[in-house]
Amino acid sequence: MDDSTNIYMVKAAWYYYIVGYTQNDIASMLGLSRAKVVRLLDEAREQGVVQFTFRASDTSRMGLEQEFINRFGLDDIFIVPTSLDRATTEDSIARATSMYITSHLSDGAYLNMGYGAMMNRVLGYLSRGTCNNLSVISLTGGVNFYLQDIPPSVMSIRLNLLPCPILLSSKELRDAMVQEPSITSIAKMVGLASMSVVGIGGISDNATIQKNGMLTKSDFELLRMRGSVGDILCHFIDIDGNPIATDIESRIVSTSLSALEHMSNVVAAAGGDEKIRAIRAVLKHGYINTLITDERTAQKVIEEDDRLKEMVP
Image (cartoon, rainbow, N blue to C red; front, side, top):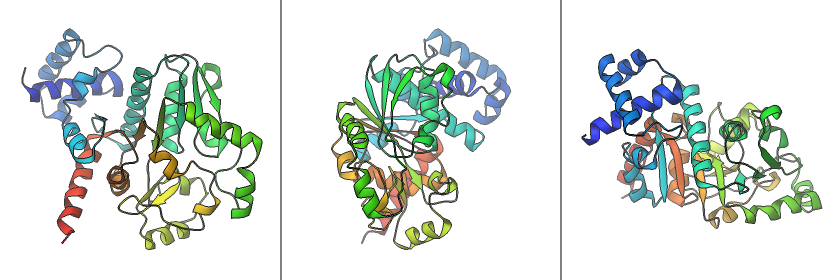
C-alpha cells in the first residue's frame, strides 16, 4: 500500500469511527467513491488500525507531522483530520488528546492541566476513560472552568484544583492569595506530574477568556495593540512567544511561563484559524514538547511560519 492510500485509510477510519460521519460524507470529503471508502474501512480493520485507539505508527504518516518535528523541535505531534464544522474538529482534537494522555500515562499517574474550553473537553473524555486513579492538578485558578464538562456520575479521575479565581482585582490581592496554604499545597503537586497538557488561546471574540467575561473586548483590543497574538495558561505572548507585560499579567493566578519552560513533557491541544499565530508563537518559543491539532490548522501554521520568515531581512 502506498503512502497516499494509507493516509486516506487512516482519515476514513477516523471520520467513520471517531467523528461519526457516514460513508457518503467521507466519500464526498475525500473525493472518493463510496465503494472505495468501504474498501478503506475494511483494510483499516484488517490491518488493526481500528482498535479503539489509533496506532502511533499510523497517525505519524498523516501529512505534516515530520515537518513540524523538524521545524519546531517537537518530540511528537498528533494531527487529526479537519471535520466539516468547527465544533466537530475541536471535539476530535479533545478526543485525540484524551487518547494520547491515556496511552502515555499509567494508572495512578499525575497530570497537570491548563485552562480553557479545550481543556474542559479533554477532562470530560478523561473522566470517562480507562486511565484509573488519574490525579489532575490545575495549573491555573478558576475552579468552575475545570468542572464544566465533567459528569460527576461517571468521573474516574481525582481533581486537585487551585481554590481561587483565575483573575483577581489587584496585584496585592493576587500576591496575598498565592501565599495561602490551600494554594501552595496544590502548587507543590505540579512537580509530581508525569505530563502537563495545556490549551492555546487566540485573540478573538471566540476566546474562552473573553466569552466567560473575565476580559472585555477593550482588554483584547489593548492586547492586540501591544502585539499579543494569543495566550498560553492565560499569559499573553507576542509573535515570538515572549510574555507581554500588562496589568492583567500581575493579577492572574497561573503557573508562570518560566516554570512551563522547565517542564519536561508538555502537550498542547489547539486548533482553529484564530489560533494560528498563537500556536506558531508557542512552537517558536519552545514551550511545548507535543502538539495535538487538526490538519487545516497545521497547514496554516506552516504557511504562517514561512510568511514570517520571508519578512525577515
